[in-house]
Length: 301
Image (tube, rainbow, N blue to C red; front, side, top):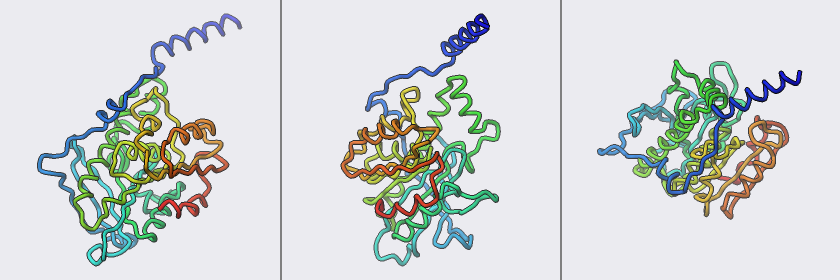
């Protein structure tokens, strides 16, 4: 038995030496450089089409070619007819969870499966408070799925074989897609570019903190159960972008028994956020928050 334990320990050490992720440091300048993007020379061309689905209301589908030639699709919802609005709408950007898609920010269910994150209710609340809501599919999600490589395979490669580059690239390039689209937002007279908030659930919460910390055009961040990430994936760890949240409204929602972030890790993230206008709302249970959590978000808008 002792010899078997020794062999197992040796195998574990060998695996760790070969495949285990090692932490690395990233400077603020290097982080900004990682999320930099080059807009098209003739400006971002966004195809906007009126949505005809009955539940859409005043909604438009969006399609554009991003900085690296990839196609991005999403949706822009308005609280009322933008052609008749007396003033520009403030904007909420919604970011979906891992394995989901932008439809989870406006549909109660998709393909027979309910939106258990309740993000569609956040959209409804935003519309009631006069916000327009913009949502996109993240890289490798929704319309951008890679049929040959699933997101679960990507995560397995990250945790089992130490392949961090594909995961980091998915997160970084999605945030860059949003930064590029913010250039377009600033040109739209129906949108108030001085009042932009971002909100996200799980992976979306992670990206909301990154986008809010790296882009000065974002004034408010609502991060819902973001996973804990350390410097093994430093380029996408929200804590490294936290200094850029100074002067912004930041709400962190966490679960005390979250498998992806402990109570202590969530508290450490909250303390690292330098914003004065910040709140930490804690909930019992795990990564899936109780449905009523949305009821307490009105003060964030």
